[in-house]
Image (tube, rainbow, N blue to C red; front, side):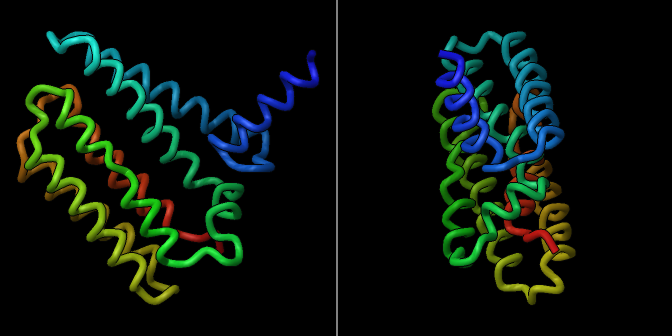
Length: 181
């Protein structure tokens, strides 16, 4: 029975962090995911949001806060930048992050325009990083993250409780695009 539990835990660990993640990486990723989830959920439950909104916010927070840390680990870099992974794979990973639209659907005050702007900024940033020469991808990623965070936080109306969302998303996804050197 114990072996089955260990195997299931390793599969979950490989899915959420990366295959062969080091112990310190796993602990740091889990701590980041849990801390961000607790913080974002605590903000959400203070509001009069209907029950699905705090639940969705908690799931999104777990993915984004955890993913931000995961994308910075060597094991995730090996996983996502292994041979055979193309720019299209990386762009598809970024494009699949449709959480802004889940928030627009369920969180009052987080509108469709806000969701569209945040998603468009994320995709535009990904394109900039992916077309940059390899030796400039890291500084380009930092530049587009800083500019996109500024644009997202100053150009669209978002309620205070999920105000963390755009900055964390715009840090997580460019980090995914950067291989380990």
